[in-house]
Length: 93
Image (cartoon, rainbow, N blue to C red; front, side):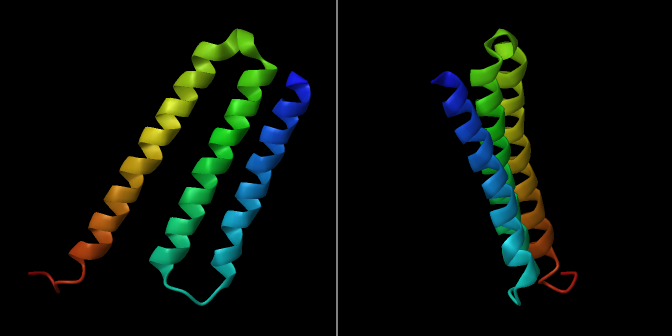
């Protein structure tokens, strides 16, 4: 049962990865594309790591560290990108 749940989590993560690439093909703004890609990539990566955590419980400390660092890294990166995109709107003032 744990193996099936592990494979489901890994499969959901791969679906999120591909789902996040679909907005890249649209005609929306670059920031929308980047936001949807980063959210889907974060959720997909976290789902895959959680699936690995179920599959390899002996490596729980490294996998939990990967989950925490992934969540923090992508959150901070989102704020940095938002700040950089908004600072260019005031024409250097």
